[in-house]
Image 1 (cartoon, protein in one colour):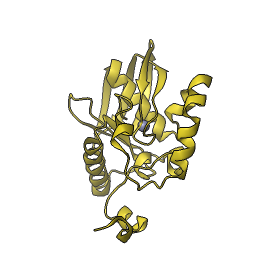
Image 2: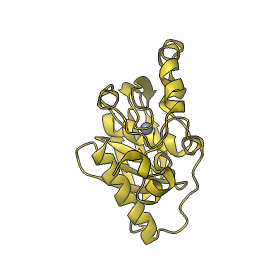
Image 3: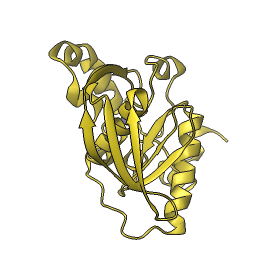
Length: 192
Ligand code: ZN
């Protein structure tokens, strides 16, 4: 099937798609999930598939245009599918170069807490507390930022801002449904 045969609304219904910079969904603060339903579980499993397909290590609901508080994370040690995740404790700091599946081709140094404690709900509505450090702590903070409408570019230094100006302009013009090039996804080691 050629590309023009599938118009965006059709493709959206056919499955979740990662929204790119410029899509208003990325700047919205999501709503908490009041009651976990099979629909939430379906969305979480679709988000996980999408994350793996794009070689990501984290994905937030707002990145697929879902306005509810859900994230998936897997840094290679097993999957976390979390509902209503919140940071309840932070300690120390670390700086990592982060990429974002919604900002292909952009890589930003972000200073975050080195250790965090997360409280959330699992798919079966059971509460869970997770202690995370280093990379895992970084990924949780990145994804929870997404749920609050915050992106890595909000941490960019003046120098970084100048460097990515052209790229952001280009991304804004691009359709969210357009395929991302391989060189863009590989521009940063961490894709979240
Ligand atoms: Zn991201």
